[in-house]
Length: 260
Image 1 (cartoon, rainbow, N blue to C red):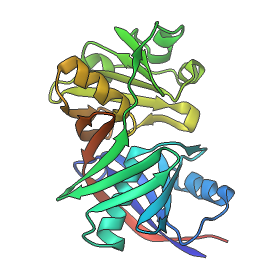
Image 2 (cartoon, rainbow, N blue to C red; image 1 turned 90 degrees about the vertical axis):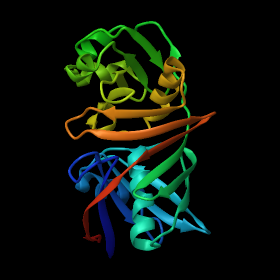
Image 3 (cartoon, rainbow, N blue to C red; image 1 turned 30 degrees about the vertical axis):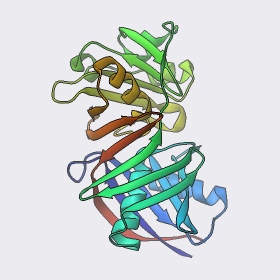
Image 4 (cartoon, one colour; image 1 turned 90 degrees about the horizontal axis):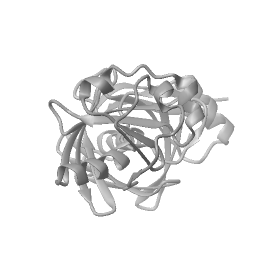
């Protein structure tokens, strides 16, 4: 069996930036074990698989080690693949997923996610957070992920995480964030429990950071930068209990994979 595969750099201002996602359109679902081993072979943060359902699509995401409930950059990349290669010019796409109904809209050279908000709540500083990140945050909040808030971009950039200690904290990894110098905020995201020590550009993390920064800064339109080694760029808008997360996609690879 041959399957078409695309690799797309999402939330990227140029090729080799943002977060690489593998996208594999399917005609029918393969066994989960096969989907997982393909994702492991691809060895990028997420591999997205989708198949058509009426006018929409059913979408799933796999890291090299597990299936996940929500993934932003691979959803953005899937929208790019549909709008660019499969149905050129299509402007709106809807996806059924484990994370609920999700949307992607093409706006010129931008693609925008319609994702749920995951509002973080103030929490006591958990034991082990300083060891986990290498520096004690000023505030700690929690949602699906931990949200560690620092006072400066330099502090977030200088973090030296201990991946075993991060795993021991539980939840879906930890987001570190601070005010940005050239953007409203910056962040980094660590998810070693899912086989992703540091994710380069995480759309789903903005479901947590955007409501926090919208409240703190008193505005609903925000720019964010994920200051990993590849750097991710986000243009976001808080819309009640939904968040609009926009960025650019750059194609890196198109090819065939062979499955027994």
